[in-house]
Image (cartoon, helix red, strand yellow):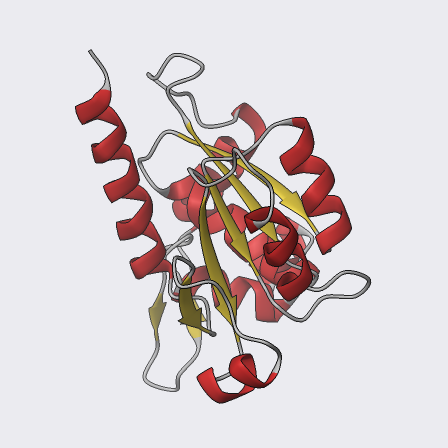
Amino acid sequence: RQAAERLGVSLGTVQNMVESGVLEAWKTVGGHRRIPVASLEAYLARRQQGTPSAVSPGQELDVLIAEDDPTLQMLYQFTMEKWDLPLRIRMVDNGFDGLIQVGQSPPDVLITDLMMPGMDGFEMIRRLRATPGLTHMDIIVVSALDAEMITDQGGLPADVTVFPKPIPFHEIKGFLRGRLVARNRKSP
């Protein structure tokens, strides 16, 4: 509770941060989480200073996340900032804003939910895949919908990677790491 107050977030968000490894913690015999002050201070210091990168601009992997739930947006941000990967993370909360961001500066990877207000992820993906020049952009879907529900909504292109919720950060990190390795092999 003290960590939530100090960070200005809900208790549930702190629990998600602990479970995803953003904050170090342990559980007491009674099941209560205990977060070391040092872990909280280190997190706050990273947030204030930004995570310095040894990678020059342009070598970062540009990741656009389309997610309408503010708690999940924070969880993506907190978790991915902790990874030792050169990432540039941008966030939008609907398909319209996703299309605008892609139009202004296409990301290397788009991570999107499917059910969002306004333009949903299905329509955004259809429009993106119909746009010449965006085939290099990887698309990852993270959704609570199962395969049958996705098919009922018209399905997704075969090249879209689909993960179920809750957010599988381990798999996403592996995907992004693989994308970075592939990029480095292409670099002179």
